[in-house]
Image (cartoon, rainbow, N blue to C red; front, side):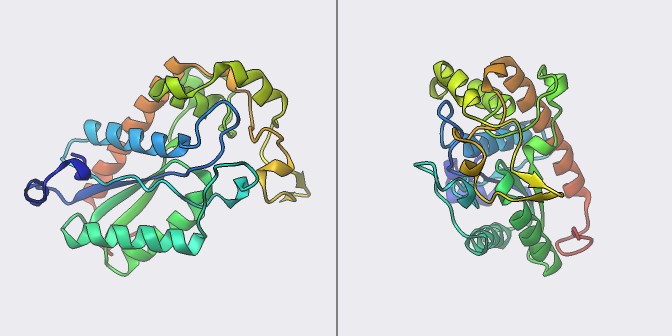
Length: 251
């Protein structure tokens, strides 16, 4: 049940302590894919996980702006500081917990959010506000079994493009795939001695893309969504069985 679609009285009668909070980003995904790719992905995975779960789950509205300054060179990218992001997530989860939804999985669609989410979910759990854990969808899927052999996550590459092509085909420009790959990069960053010398994506990718979106497939995107939804449902089951908020939370 999506919180934004409920009346307050329906929300009051939800009968669950489980909630999902999707978080994404508004950032470049090359010349072929929309700025909202990560937010669309997080919202869709949260919906799929809630549908597949064994128990009722409240789905909160998606947080659309995250820690994405690394893409600042590309027009339309929005970002906030890690401190601002952690505070916003923390206070949103605290408000969910105030209404009794104190077992919260934060469903993440953006790699730049990962460190901040791990810290804030740990803090929420340790201080007893809520038992919160982060779930990043692309860490829970296997592109090979979805039909994308030898495909890394990349950025705006075959994995993300497949998912958004399944979700919003109207927003994917296949005519720009070749340019995106040709002006892109094969891997993330500029590495020497185990150190990434680049802080921003335009330092190593002219198009902002890592990987070849021409290898994407909407059918693979559907399979990825199914995988992510099932994985999220399994996680929700484990979260539901944990002790109360603050007990045995993540390190």
